Length: 245
Image (cartoon, rainbow, N blue to C red):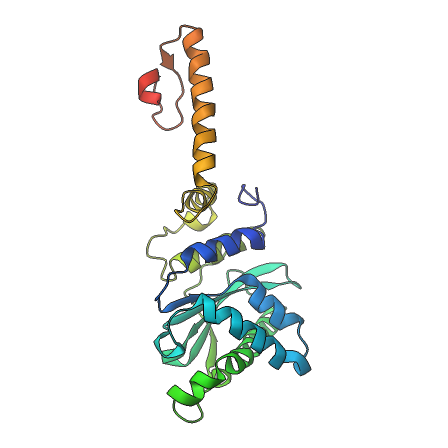
């Protein structure tokens, strides 16, 4: 329901999107939303304990080592601005990019500080790999943090989650037209991509439900002895029952 027009995207939809993007052996690492949330809510004195917990979780999530990681995608929710944005970590370039569809002087400093804090936690999580496989002094905390100019800007207060979901799926935005981010049909596309993903355990049940609904509607038309189904939303012209089936 949060993917309906002008609704605010919640963490459940974002985490489902993250889960479906994960691939074993991939160099692209997708973190769930609660990673940044836990970093934000943890005091400095408990950062190490949090890193130990996250290390256990990430061992099962990512099947290739840090040395083979190409990009890290970390969705972040700014509670002060009620806003989703994306942190992209590029280990080989020693760079962190902030993808933000609604930057502002009031929030930019806080989002930059959150990125710094997340980098410190990553240093704790991957300390063993950093010591064993990277040059001396290599640290996430030393990465250059920049606000990318490639991030498109939203024109309303509700589409930040749509922007983040699109960037997660296609960071270079090759498949997105200039207006696609803010169009209602883009929310439909995202909803259908989540629904029809092969890893969706409810897909079979939903398909059977949809077939029953279609069958019931078509049977009613047949009972009315109407050979055509007017105003079909896709065909835009009358079609026969068999075509609709």
